[in-house]
Length: 281
Image 1 (cartoon, one colour):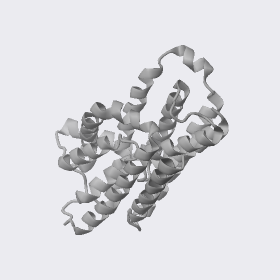
Image 2 (image 1 turned 30 degrees about the vertical axis):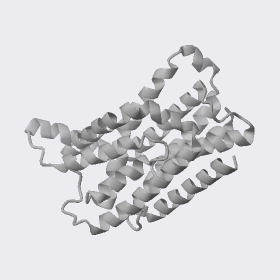
Image 3 (image 1 turned 180 degrees about the vertical axis):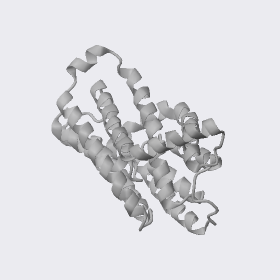
Image 4 (image 1 turned 60 degrees about the vertical axis):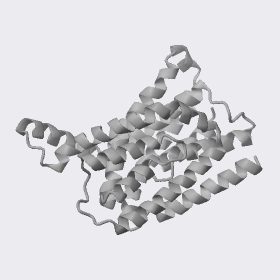
């Protein structure tokens, strides 16, 4: 792997991991286009690419942990205080419980279909179609959120289960993790900013689990001596920095605007991918 490739991929991962546009879909399309331009076989993903994908996710994982570091400490302290006092009326104390609940249901949905979803990574036409589905989900969620009577802008057990299921379905490349979780939260009546913050916090255990799961395929120590460490680390750093900035400014964006712009973008990019890879590639 070369620096140009890894930096482009790192930038794309950081930009799309937390925006509701599907990082997996954009990574697939970007990688395929880059390989086509450079004359590589885009239907093959070697061990180095698998490891690079793990490093990209680690970069964005570190970004979200750094951004929410103060909140994470507060939530953990509140949880253990609630355990001691046996009083879980505090939302901060319950949030770790909701995150664990959501993660459990994510794993229940995602694990059985993970192998099938991996086969879609080399099918850009399918990815384009799934991106269009993401766009439709975002547009529908905005309509629903405007019509629903909001009784509570916070997450509860029922909402955490639904959001967790939505996140599990985002294992399909092209279905946005942040988009599906935020859209589901909005449709459940969760406040716009709370929906985004919960989505980002919910990504922490899921990204960590994904990193561990993907690592099982590259346990041979001999692999690591032949890796392009410089380009790989450069891509991971770019993913982390860009991811941090995206979290910061996306939350500001949601305070003022809807998700419709991202919905129309996903429809456009998905349709473009289908047309290009179906008829011209």
